[in-house]
Image 1 (tube, rainbow, N blue to C red):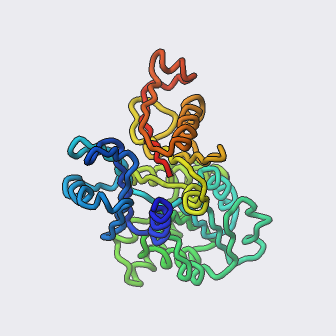
Image 2: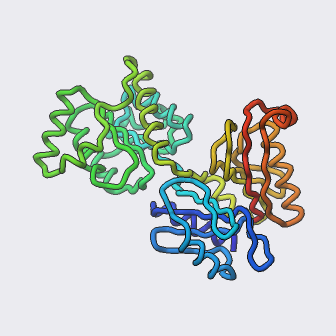
Image 3: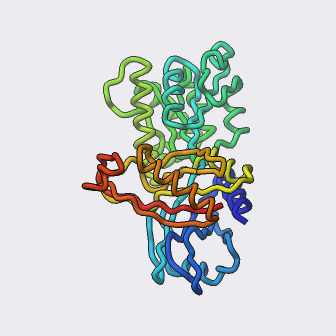
Length: 344
């Protein structure tokens, strides 16, 4: 069932639905430990990992609140971890000019899927954008209307002129997206905004567009402007408080048939290397994907996972990073993290 469950999760994320992943961290039901039991809620569709707990899950859903965030809750002496999930974020750069190039490289450094679109072959090619996941040479309007990039997409409009800016903006402005920003002088922006209003787009839609684009850090060079745009995207991205699950980890969960453990940080107190919702997948052949922070804590999680794979069981562990425990683990962060280990 585990593989089927994660296949369903993968498909729902691809369809860009509103997805909640709910995990029981600790607690018992009829004498059985529940650590690692999961429920998936995508819009109004619900998938339970183990139908033997259907009535229990109905009780839980009736007694907890689902908010857009990643957080812990409790019900009937059961600790519950709730994740508002998103697929890996897409950075869609409309225009292949001087700002697009450093922005593409920064986007990859920030772990976005990066797509660059331009209608000029000399700008839209993999020799120029060798780090991009996809480079599309084509008509802006056709590409943006034909392709569904999903709700977790960040559109940056940096074309060569206000005509193409307007075309790109009209193609995405009334779609679901996480961010859209458009570069340009005050005069250029005013021209595009006036044209959109005359075309019937509401001021409410237009106000959601970030223009002038980027944080005001005084950027002058293309690289500096790209940094300011990336900084604004990070700021907007982190407001949403979504957990992003790596597509690489999801594919391993679905396609790799060997036993494995998915380790997830479900709680942290004080300073720690990685945040709540961070995941690491450890496999029977001793390989792994993802990270829960590196250092000795990650090594402890890795060794614990191998032990659980051998015992075919799930568990919960708290790693205390403060005072003497911190020095034992080789960490100086302080605080503590709680990790749930899910045997698959």
